[in-house]
Image (cartoon, rainbow, N blue to C red; front, side):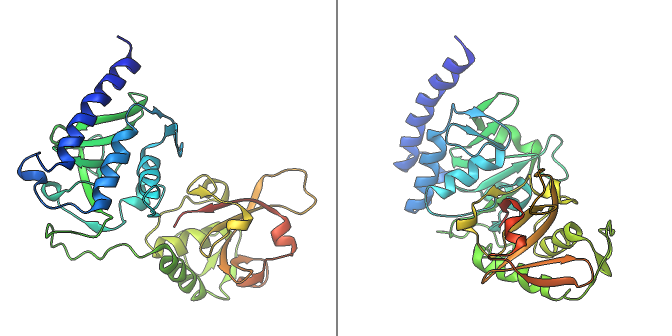
Length: 301
């Protein structure tokens, strides 16, 4: 039996256990009443078992670790982050023993530090995740990964009391975008300095500015603009939204698409960024050379 045959055969068994889960026959751990969205998340995640793993792949045929959760929640109309780092801060924190179907669960190889892989808990001591080592979306025993557990987050509204950590639910993307812009505005006029240290707020270059602003909003970005362009979800100009990162090449006439600048789209046809003598400033975007220099737009909210 090939690995792929084994995975698909396992999927049949999983679907049977999932139908029991939906019928409320999986014991005390899943005995609480589940709303329809919880059921939908479980059903969608389970249906993806056997799909191929590919780093940062967004589906529907291949998935990265975080992207599996992003895709699953998108199918029920909920937009969440697209990186392990952002998702590990999303929603409400829940304890290891209080997870419910639909919760995001996070792990690291030694059970400490930042998470390096994640999955979706589906109940019955099981979670689904896209495994690099197994090159597929797989089903695993949650308890067997207890020594690798580093956190769990609840995206869906709670249907019962589970964890009283006091953490606030994640803000909607539109509210978070407003927060990002507000944070950026407090640095208006701060001087531009190429290669400015990420540890200072006395000067910025374009990417240290975006890194700082998003960090204060609870989102971790890499240091330079080209690295930042590799995270998040790519969007088109016509779908540009407040809070999106806009990446540009050196000039309108440049034959190279090498990224040299990054700005934050602030809505109303404007960008918030830093360059040259104005430092941190607003610039008109629509119809300008800034727009014509665009190479890529990424959404990390």
